[in-house]
Amino acid sequence: MNRQLISTRSWQYRAWIAALVTLAVVLSAGIGLVWQARTSGNRYADETMRAYSAQLRESAPDALRELVEDDGAPEGHLYRENIDVILYTRRPDGTAGLYTANTYLRNHPSELPSTFGATLDERIGDYAYKTYTFVCNDGSYVKLLMQADLLGGYESDTGFLWFFPLTIVLTMGIYTAFAFLMGRPVVRAIKQQKEFIHEMTHEIRTPLTVIRGNVEHMLACPDHTVMQVSELLDNTLEEVDHITALSQDLMSSVSTPSPKRGKSADLSDTVSGVLEIYSEIIGESNRTLIANVQSAQSSLDGEKVKQLLIILLENAVKYTREGDKIRVSLKKTDSGALLTVADTGIGIADGDEHKIFDRFYRGENAKNQQGTGLGLAIARNIVEEAGGKIQAMHNVPSGLVVTVLLPERV
Image 1 (cartoon, rainbow, N blue to C red):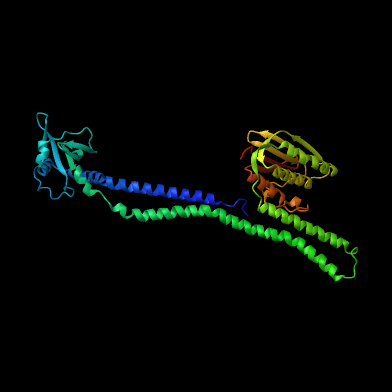
Image 2 (cartoon, rainbow, N blue to C red; image 1 turned 90 degrees about the vertical axis):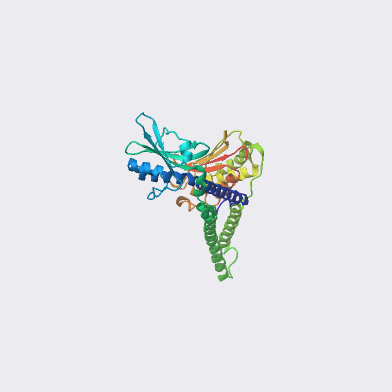
């Protein structure tokens, strides 16, 4: 089951992000369509004059002169509409001659541009033109002109016909993608919840089976005294204690309350107090406790620090043998308080460094040990609720090292 459900605020943030991305896409599409519509006239002029110039390049000088002197002559030219043609020829004296049937253009001559083969903006008299100048095969210069105020009729509004369907498709696509991204944690949480219920049922079924068997055995022998069935009773009580511990750990792992976060406090006294109690327990089990506690600040509630350290110490004691060492250190770092619990016990298998923090997970070398498999899961909840980090790694040459980083302020 997911350790931290997606909060309402998180969903709101994601919804706002989706809305802003959608708005940005729609605005971009709208601006693009407006630009496309407003520039379509210019593109029409450029494409039309380029196509017309390709037809005229191979024309004979007489045909060109006839074209520019008589509007009625060039019936075979496909792009003649709204295009004026000016023909420049070199006179024997080196001057340029101008031929055109347009009286206005004859009275307001246009000079040859410095750039050929390109559409230019040019002002001739009181009018703005789009012009295109090229050189014919005989060396004559030909300029094609379209009045700029006529290009508005070629601006295309067809793009707006597919603007709204495009907007709908983009919006649906964006929200589908965000729904998928936001839904994955929920699906994963449901899957983990099912796994959690299955594992919990398995964990409870075993002690219940033992209790049922013991009770049935005692009922089958009603004449036995309490002393005669004392072993069965002891075994039954042990299983009841196991279920009680399991239920308490389950409640802690599922609904760990948010740690109290106040002002930063020194953890050294809290850690030292726990170690003072556990030093006797560890010493009586023929293990050695080595402590190095320095001053370190954290805003995590002192009771939660105790619970966290007790879990780590009990885990270390459980998976070590006589003669093993358990080292506990607390020191200050730039990121906060660093708590380390290292042992020289049986350790964990390669690849289990992250799995040991999962509920009910127990490595192959630890399945014979008593426990609920929830201690480290509870520890992880405490640390992550406080905004810290917890990780496990192999201890060299043997054993396990668990490090906890608790931020000084949250």
